[in-house]
Amino acid sequence: MAAPHEPRDDAEAPHTEEPASPEAEQDRAASEGSPQDFHSATLRGEDDDDTVSDNPDPKSAAEPDDVIREPGDVEPDTSDGESGEAVRVSHDGDDAPMDAEPTTKKRAALVYNPTKVDPEALRARVSEVAAEAGWAEPLFYETTVDDLGDDATRAALEEDVDAVLVAGGDGTVRAVAEALTSTGIPLTIVPSGTGNLLARNLNLPLDDTDAMIRATFEGKVHPTDTGIARIRRADGTVEEHGFVVMAGMGLDAAMIQNTRPELKKSVGWVAYVDGAARSLVNAKPFRVMYQLDGHGHRLHSAKVQSVLFANCGALPGGVALIPDASIADGVLDVAVIQPTGPFGWLGVWRSIWWDNTVLRRFRAGRRVLERRRDSSVRYLRGSGIELATAPAQPIELDGDDFGEATRIYTRIIEGGLAVALPASHDTSSL
Image (cartoon, rainbow, N blue to C red):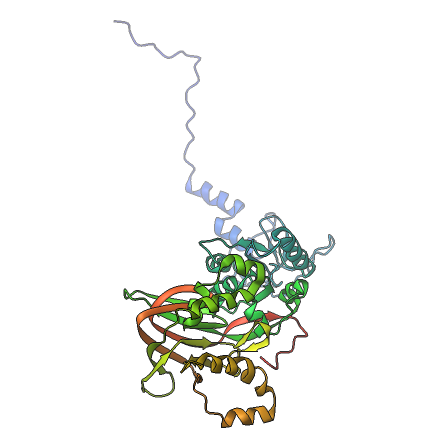
């Protein structure tokens, strides 16, 4: 077995430092200063080379005079153009004063029926006017067979838009208005359909698209009423939809069902005359039970051809179907149409075409109407009305077919829809 190697005489032995004596440690501390003394000196603003007192005054060491500054004690360095104000820096590096207002631009959305407008031209014009007004690029939504505009409008609301424009027929306007009801977001109607019923009742220009587009960005906002219809089907299912002009049960809804789409597309609202003639052939009166809100719990019964529930009452051609209806009075106007006898329909047409449209314009004519006793058209008013019948009857909302129902409850939401109007538009007659 090999013996362990012996250490060489010339090898360096590990250096071991002798522990310092207490007297030496005390001398070194006195020359270097303690950590506590260094901290106290720093608080007083002394340099490392300054002499530190062995017995610092705790009170003076804690003085904040040179540590905490009052606002205005130190002037900002403006040599490089800095203002000295705190700034907010965005994700792309832009900055703005912390107290500056947010710079997010307003944004509008356009919901349009591509079969009623020139989509490319309309989108371009809306974008141009929005840019002129300092708004962001608008959002655009096309309606489809499955979405008349309500879903598109709700999608726009999720994007926090500040205004919505609608271009299409009465059905598109109704769907968009339904989604905007009670949101406070203003609606601009760009007349595009054949009826333009809401635009007519608001006395809007029907042939000035540019004026209505500009109303979105530089016009005024006016509150208008909207209608709500809760419909119960024969199988017990219940639906709720909005309307802005009028809803109906009976002959008027059958007229909508019997109007030929191709004829409506070619001649406009006049096609409803053909639908009415086709409906009258098989028209039969039906019995309804109804109760008017605000008139107690009394039930009424009537044999009718049609019942109309109106938010506003003007039809194309200047026909005042329900003359007292106003779009901004918080009241639902109801017309119960119940012709009697072989010449009953003559009385209905006289009431609508002659009495409402002509005689009511003159004081003498109104006196004649007050003395006349005619039950072919009966007018009611209230905040809402519930009506039941059997069997189920056809229903329409703003000229759109909504199938059949055995019960319908309609009511008005006062000021439920904000509408954008040209700045100079007269609202005294609304």
